[in-house]
Amino acid sequence: MNNLLEAKNIEKSFGGIKALDNISFSVPENSIVSIIGPNGSGKTTFLNCVNGIYTPEKGSLKFKGQELIHKKPHEIAKLGISRTFQVARMFQKISVIDNILAPVLGSKSSMGELRKEASLLLDRVGMSSLKESLGGDLSGGQQKLIELLRSWIMDSSLILLDEPFAGVHPELKHLFYEEIQKLKQMGKTFILISHDMKSVYTLSDEIIVFDLGAIIAQGNEEDIKNNDKVIEAYLGN
Amino acid sequence: MFDLILMALASGILMGLIYGLVGIGMNILYGVMRVVNFAHGEFMMLGAYLAFSLNKGFGLNPIQSIIIVIPIFFFLGLVLHTFLYERIQRSDDPEVASFLVFFGCSLIITSLILQIWNADPRSIPFPFETVSIFMGPIFLPMGRLISAGICILVILLLSLFLYRTYMGKAIRAIIENREAVSILGIDVHKVSAIVFGGGLAIVAITGCLVTLSFPVITPVQGQIYTNIAFLVIVLGGLGTPLGALIGGLVYGIAESLSSVFMPIALSPVVAFVILIFMVMVRPQGLLGKVSTRI
Image 1 (tube, helix red, strand yellow):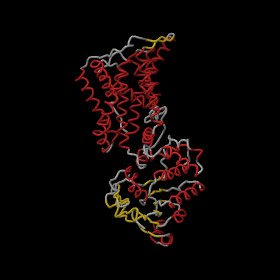
Image 2: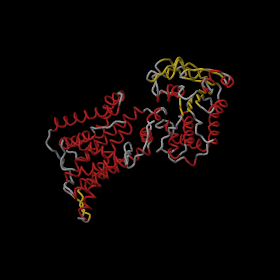
Image 3: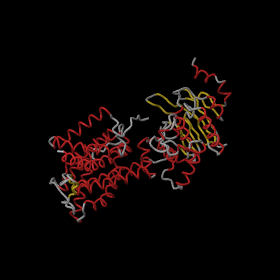
Image 4: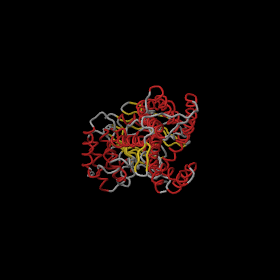
């Protein structure tokens, strides 16, 4: 299997504190790689580097062989990387359907077709009645689901999910699982950050553990559960 | 007295529409680019003086001049965006940097106007200059009515653009959250260039309309309109384009009504008292929402 994303020796500091310290790992195509770790371990900072919000001081981040570092967020999005946020960043004063279509605003594709596709997506997750509601009228979980649905419209190859299950109703969580599985069946690749270990173990092909900006363990569920460094990072000495 | 109040109310609404349009331009620029254009009024006066020259040189009335000044100011906006905005964004504090840069622009534009058109007050004759419409005790000068009509048309077109077109929706999305928009693949820089050009075009339209509404224009009026624009967007809500229209109407009516009850020179005081009151009780403005930037 080819690697879709390759991170090599990534370093990022904030005011002398190393948020990412020599991070190297690969994300194979059509896989779900989860990053777990205590709060402040650098998980979200890594995602911010992947989609261009932060620029690492050192290292290389290659997506389909193309260097991402120094590219602007919109250029990275155009390459095929989409993202959801820990706190959903829906446009509160824009309708739900336009929120889904936001990535293709001004696109040359037929807007009629795209609107139809967005309507079908909303129908599938039981939210078609909310199509014309404002983004701000949705619950936090629904907003996160809408962010995920954007990935269908963007047709991204790599989808970054930052705490998608946090504060989400169990029924919605089930819908998230279904959508992630469907996207994976279509060949999409994921990097998942979550504190919800059950979801991480259910969905992931590989788990990477961050602590204090560095990778302390990597492997499958069993490898992680039995790793002393991971136990120490979560429970302390 | 009642007739006077009615007259002041009508006049306030007509002027309020112009003030609203002045504020809308500034509000969109602030919303999308997070820059406070402190040269807003001076750009407006530049538009007014351009209309004056188009009248002198080619016999165009201010309404016809609008068609000429729109592309000129749009292009000027694109040029300034390229040379100023990118540098402002690279600074440690873009909002403060924008204040200083545009304050500098205001001085440059005022000097430029003085140099080209000198300090004499100027006016543009137009066909309906002396015509007024009487509605019972209210008489409305045709110039102000036409200005208000054009303002309504521009605001309607702008609303359609912002709420019905994809570029308009992108602009509203950027006003809400720049970062989220950029990771969706929208080139915020390109959109902000278009917005800056469009914002200056709106300012130029307002400049042409001012020549219809007031008997004379002078080079130093720019600062007054910048203050009004600032006041209007604070009243209406910073970053909410149509809130500026409400702010403009409130300001226009307050200014006009106050002139009935007190010396006209004190009318700006009333407006600023309203501003201070608004900042104290509803700092987010009439249509603004309390928000935190993530």
